[in-house]
Length: 425
Ligand code: IMP
Image 1 (cartoon, protein in one colour):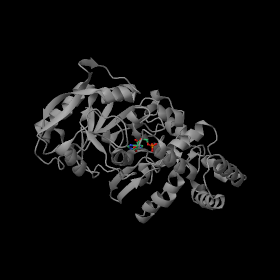
Image 2 (cartoon, rainbow, N blue to C red):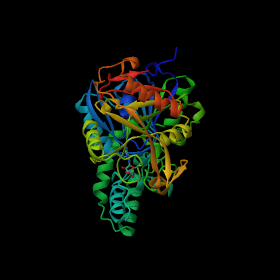
Image 3 (cartoon, rainbow, N blue to C red):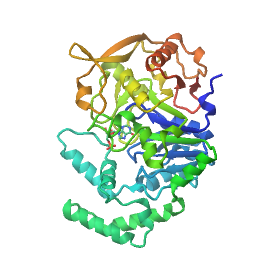
Image 4 (cartoon, helix red, strand yellow):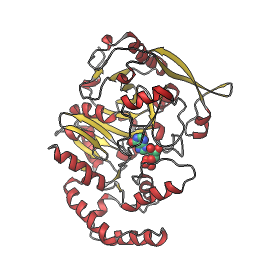
């Protein structure tokens, strides 16, 4: 018998095989019940994991979604752009209100700090761009740029004796050369407070990870964003600034992909994109409105409306292949209930020529016209269904068609927003 994802074991990674916003928080919250360790490896407060569980509804940005399981050690790896303002002033407040402890959280001292000037510069750059990227404004790009330039402050710097000096030097530089008007005293006080709150939570995450692997514990990596926003392989420049795929785990935790047993690619039953950049299967008209309303396609972080599109199997297949995805999780299938016809993209043409996918190229993708396969929809509300074979035949056919074309089995089907509204196949 095929082992259900519900009883997963070993090392599992969940990565978006789309442009993000695929409902990762919720599957991770579910799978974290089984996890000894849950780890974030990329992104910063630009990501927003919405979670609805027995404790309430949460929008988390930095905190791993495994936080709700007291026994799960939650790691924020060195590859995360660590935004303490989001973590402490927003996320810890949400958790505190719901009586959820974050004592099981460990933050790597080598993670780059997202500082106030990163957020300012993110906004300034975006406002002056002729061709806007539509960043979330969370300072993630400038924070990663500082890391690569080797000038970024890291979480561990907060506890150094000369932190105030390091901060002053950086603020003086920003004010002098970028004409910012940052207040050293204000930022110092703010970050001294953050340092107090986070002090018990700082720890080297790589040895923790290595020990967990040696012990054969269950480890869950939770990706942020999706493969199509990867800084290298995505539709540059309309991408985020980190590695959103499996390589992000390697970079953050010194862990070779061979050691990952289970790579789950997650996507919605349709696709969405927020911010700028091409989306070949973009849906217009009444169906667009329906998806936005039924699917609540408004960004958790940015509050912006997401553009919906039909599922694009050209992109999905490429994302799955590159990342070694061995199973797919499909969320929000329920949003399609009531649709007469559902399209899926199975190829591209440019002019009258069939073309293969070319990664990392926004210009190419913006020229591609989708070739669609049209499938029948279904009327029935599917949110109460927990068994694949009880789904309407048309919904089963939709799933089977995706599996056949991508050659990857779908093992998790989201049929509603709540934890239990899932079909484990
Ligand atoms: P940044 O990551 O804030 O720099 O934004 C760069 C691009 O990535 C923009 O198009 C954002 O809308 C998009 N983006 C960043 N984080 C997310 C996410 O978590 N979900 C969906 N899109 C995202």
